[in-house]
Length: 632
Image (cartoon, rainbow, N blue to C red; front, side):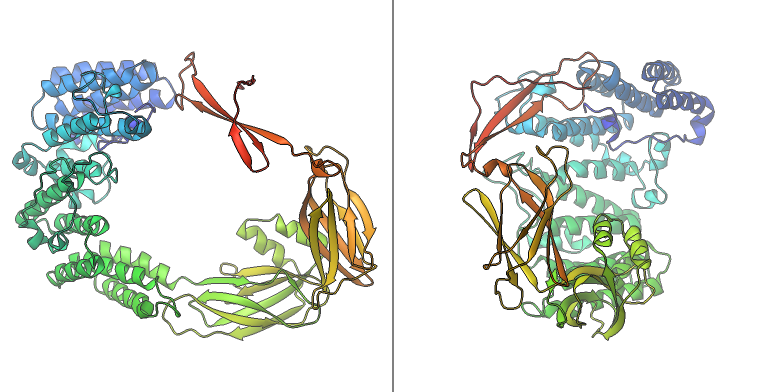
């Protein structure tokens, strides 16, 4: 709630539109408020809202009063110190003199304000000790966690009173203070739906540590995962009356009972699906997937000729797809064809109810199932003029086209600095392929990821790109690997303050003497000496030893003999250790501020932790003077 826009991360969001009833009276003034806000004139916007408040009070317009109160709160967070207390106080005052439905709306918002404050200050509440009573009745910022939770719970419960009246109140009456999404009222048609679903956002939270009674409620009854009619008749109770999960289940039951009677089938399906997925996620009993599938199939069968069944069928397909992801041909072969089952359900839904919400979801799932994937993995170095293999992982195609592109060292360096897919394709498209070939792959239409090994041709000494794609001209699905053909291998060893490199034959491991080894880098601004550029020759053991007193990053080692040349990159030399075996100490400091955002002129409080590290040993830095610099 300390953030400028946090007041709008609530169940009530405001749009620029107004209901027809209030358009002529208020729209022009609200447009002026929003214009001032957009221009950063918060104080002027607040003054404009004050004028609206006078009009709303004179007209006894409860909807506009709620909107005014929300905007007042929003601007107070920017303009006033300790605005949080005033906002809460204003809400409580307005609640005390309000009646249904305004009172219920404000109770709901107030609960959400408290909940937001907890989410933004979670660490403070978890570090506090519970007290017998409220430390400060008015200042909620110093309450313990249990007290704050009880207050949130109280106001949500208050907001859900007068349930029968709320069920008879169409939500469209509050369009002026709601951000209305297209088609949303099909699933949330009444004020009863609106208030209960907002409360659910709190009760469904994973903050399981808020209450820890000895008789903690758990979703351990398999009946909670039954179909809507069976669930509506359950007796849901526990000694743990403040349990989040218990209250969530009761709200779900209230909503399901209401829509079973009022005939709003889409609203019923929406809340019932939400309930089933919530129970499945939080239940402690086993075999949850099987029970969930049974409930979904029961619901789908109840609507054989209605697009409501498509919503349930999508969830069934989604479960099959998830189960299919666990397939492994060695350890878990059973779910291999589950993804295919999911695809068949999606195809049926799309064909039968093409314009339904379920078909829309199925289309997205189908696209994911049919999505082609490709990845090749190759060795970084291969011997000259000898066949080698690459590993190909693929899905949903049966042919692969390969291209082989030779690279100069400069081209390789440029490609390695190219990260965007489009830029990589553009770079490769300008190269000349030295070889092209195709391979037939096995696709059994199980829509699973498969892998196979492919033999690549013999390569002459040098760098190459191995490029693969399902189609010769497909720039969307591709994979490539970089490989260097060389018979040289380089072994690094650090000892006695020096770095030794041995050049050996990649095939048999024999040392190679008389090899020219060049060490070169590009100077970095933080390096403490000039560029490194040193050439040595290997001895009869194939070794060269490099001594340097400087630090060097990204060192490239070029190894050459006769017509063969190889490059080995990204070596690092730490010169501090050469000729000096004394272990050096490194110092690190971490700073923490008391808040993330400050107003102009506000004091910044901070604390810091200093650490000294020698080798692998670390300890707190104490009795040491440090300099702290504040930069704009």
